Image (cartoon, rainbow, N blue to C red):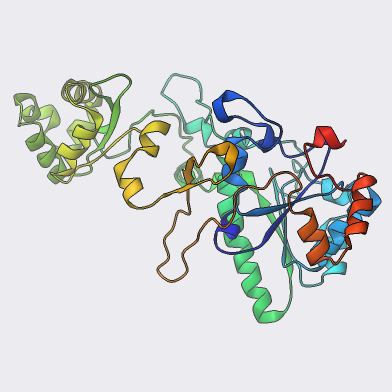
Length: 389
């Protein structure tokens, strides 16, 4: 998706009868799934791509995939280890077809190692990477992240890796294989935990919203239904601004709160005092009052808040999906803004098999009769996989 946003022609080879689970996942318009072309998750992550529906287990379909690789710069896959080899489409095979191909495998635990064959999903990888062990409150169980965080982390990491490999190829003419472990990419998000153990033998545990030095540091209840604001004070200077914003109530001059060390030791009482103030204000008002005195604060936004956020909308963060089934709904756009070569959404997420004629006809040079024969033999599909299987 990221490469497509920046102008790459991305051909998503979709197989059937088992297609991407993202096509089957909620949310759906009005809560109703309509075939394999109505998922909101699919609409957001498949944008900008072409869909070519090929049965990779059919000998002719397998050969079509190899022909597509022969005219491509990059192969991206995140199957479990061994799947591409069993299909006869692993790097050792494909580099014989395209010697300078760049190939990235983004499996859960990497292509080699004693646990490389483990089945994995993005939400599960956060546990094996050590992230979830630090997420949650003290004396409570680990709090699993409700999003498959490893998937976008792997995508971002992989995008950088393939650009580096393509740059290397532009200088040397040589392609290469990239073995990306999603668990290792996630483990890089907790360097403090790893280094604390290697340096001090200390195993970090869950501390909720607390910080090692900043106090107050947490998420505080605000006026309204399930409204919250985060606050972080990092210095005595910021504490002075914080007290000023609250009107310098008497409790702020208590010796328990006059310096950072004392505040850190008395966080439970301090958090209760802060909450007594935040509960009287909306989350946006808390942010405005504290930001005006140089204290970091922001509302804790939900999906509706983000879509309607005036700052994000003023920056043009959202793009609109032109798919009829999505009714021009906004979605997150490119997350960086380049002055000369800005990314943009060039096409909506494709219908299943929408670009078979373009990929097989224009790019590979097959005739309409040949494409029709492939369809008749169920080497390719054009509609809902259930209807074509």
